Length: 73
Image 1 (cartoon, one colour):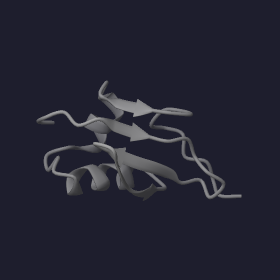
Image 2 (image 1 turned 45 degrees about the vertical axis):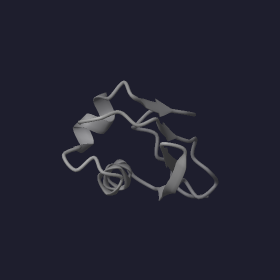
Image 3 (image 1 turned 90 degrees about the vertical axis):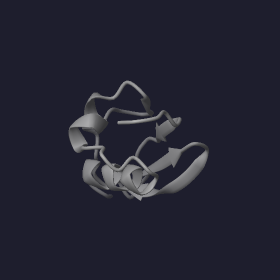
Image 4 (image 1 turned 90 degrees about the horizontal axis):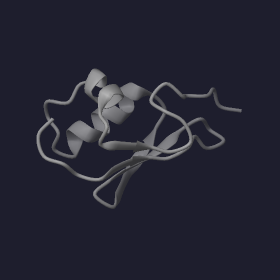
């Protein structure tokens, strides 16, 4: 991963999705680690992998880590 942008993944909502914010901008609602990775790629982190997302200390996971993806209600 090159460059650092503030990245926040918010707690799951009632649909099981988690808002993804990069550099102060909400990019969308992710329902899986794969979707988080795709949002980050679209934000300019072309070489990021799912493993990078899991291991990165630069991502602020709120309300649970990268393995928390509850089923929708």
